[in-house]
Length: 261
Image (tube, rainbow, N blue to C red; front, side, top):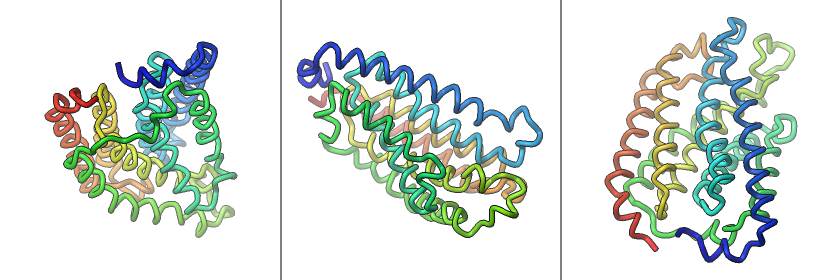
């Protein structure tokens, strides 16, 4: 079974604490994410935030909250912890660009993951990567080019924006650095999962599905005048296509990855 040697070195109390905290943090994230992320679907005053709200909702739910819940059930799943860390790294990088690490509370996620990593029974394997799937890694690298440009443009609005004229709340709610962070985080997660490991099929699907949902959200809210930061129809179809191809490549190569020891 994956990571069994690492698990045997962890005390029972440590594993129990890890599972409880992973479950608590995962549930809190799902609830808070839904409360903020889905508001634009039911509140007309939040319509202008539709892309800013929904894109992070999908990504933070699928590749941060779900991994935390999985870790509570399956504490040896090192890929789940890697994926959650990948998204948080993207969020921190974006907040550094926008210089709102503290004011935007972007430090909370990494602090939570540091606690979980200290307790994790497979923490010794967290940075032990095997060989990458070249096709999947290439997809992540290609996607990283427009993602970095997009993230930079959005995160820097936090510095250029005037809070006094922020009548819609984009600046106040750190939407610019927030959307930059999830896009960067998704690319980092795609690169991390490309280093295939036994039993990682679920994460291939969740990363690919997140990219597809990002694309669909961009298509549904393509007017960037009405919905600031929207990636629009063209890039929306691009994200949709890349996410689909990522899953297909992962499925085709899953049999080989299952033989990794």
